[in-house]
Length: 434
Image (cartoon, rainbow, N blue to C red; front, top):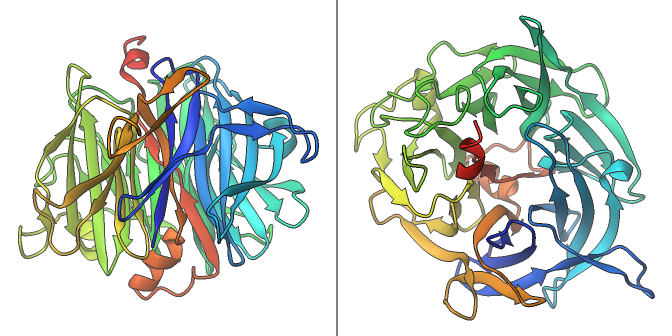
């Protein structure tokens, strides 16, 4: 049975916890509220920040979790983090801390993608555009790859690692957006990098749509979701899903766009494969930035590569356009062995099997207080109610990658545990600063 972990934060965005829920709706609140920066015999605890990130991974037979307690500086500027690794005790379910370090020691600050192959963990950093290799026996680190900045018209655009997947034949498949320092709005075109894990030279694909936010590998294809530039109320009409053929590193000529029926607005946030089907998530703020409109579409990789979804009922099914309030920022599709997890702002849901319809999204948890709701993942710590928003999410039991790839018959990635972080929209109050 799969279990989803979520970061929960308070209304002031300065305190967080991590809780979890399984497919039956059984919750563990909280899993952790702090990191031990001392020793086992002389512990020194520090609370999680108001921006905790959680990524699950598999190491051998152990289910493990990375937690980054992140604090960010001005827009577009790198922040600071205390990052710890935990093992989930197979008998008790307790998260046992293995190691913790500062971002300066780890070599990454803001993990947005994680892949484990054998005894090495590869971490993609949003802030620096680097991929770091971590030896899971010694916890020593080295830089595997660094995406370079780009310049255009006298402006320098910094790389940001927005997502990473893996295929044994092509290596790590990572996407990078490029943003002017100090800006949320001025983007250059995105890139994809195919990075061999043996340290040999990586190949890069330029010219992808601006503000790429997610990548999913299925077979020899990488599906890249992008906003098309800055987020905006009502969705960005430049949003796309583009396909890169990995054995030739060529971008397809027929992307899905924000006007590809049944979609009428952006933004494309995620693509996930499970059970031979492709699931597409589009979601965007309304013009008042008070709620989201979203739609899930179940189709096939062939239809996405063809640039259209085809005929309703024959080639695709859909939930139709639904709304989520409040306008919380965290969104993700995460395949697991027994379900497809869907995080919609402040809620954690599962998607029912079969064709999609208006009843396919079933809530299992949300950011409310656990004592006040049968769905709540929040609690009170040091008299602070941490029950306002979901900040991140990741499958931590039942490797999402193994389940998804096995379901579609792709064996190449079964040696790796791959996890992506939930996509975070810019919060309304930050957009208003534009």
